[in-house]
Length: 355
Image (tube, rainbow, N blue to C red; front, side):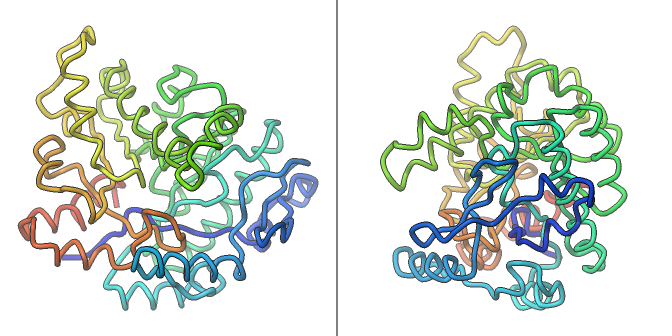
């Protein structure tokens, strides 16, 4: 069966922003650093996300290999999309037929003003459209939308769909709103019409919340910052009116593992929701979750079923979820039937993203 990597990344570089309109030059992200061997993106006069950089990435790769035994090294040309052919060649070596591409910079808020967010989102989406065109369809991608300007967000979604986008990104906390807020219903309606999912990759676009939880437990702060909001968002979507209002809409929750699925389902079954929870809410509500090879998958399958799990490599990143050989390792674990493995590697992500 073909193999689809449901969580791979592009890593933005200064070249990314060459795709912005010349009239938006004042909003162009600027690479700042090094500051204690780290680099950052500055957008609209404010330091935003840490920026990936060849120098710091090598250090992170070596540390990950040393501390976890997992090889996450990839070539600079493939990581930064300097050479799409090199990326495709590495995918062939890994026996991956397609990668669904997610962003790196938009994991957090990139702008405080609507006009800045619109400009940066447009530039990124144009860059991705060009990468997709060069990939002969092997690199579909998830569009980023400027939610501060809903009319522009809908325009971007429609435009992106014409150039290889296979999902619409929304963060688990989007400014001062949660994904269950009716403010986002126009996007959900349009995504339903376009037959693409709403994708909640780990992230957090609320600076105050990030400041609150960032000091927590040193290197484990990312759990509070990104994983917890992702899990809570899935819980909230299931409990909300969204599954009934948009019965054909699909959601995916990416890069938080899947070990939490039994807890969320069991917790919701105990609560008075004002509605009867389906026996398998993930399947009934079109909710997909990306798992990891370290998850207890036989246990998770009792709650998630066979049709709603996908898996990814986190290609290009050096995080706790990064596992370049994830697809092969899933096959070699020996705790799942070949039929279930084929679903996780191909049938499920194909259905999720309408590929």
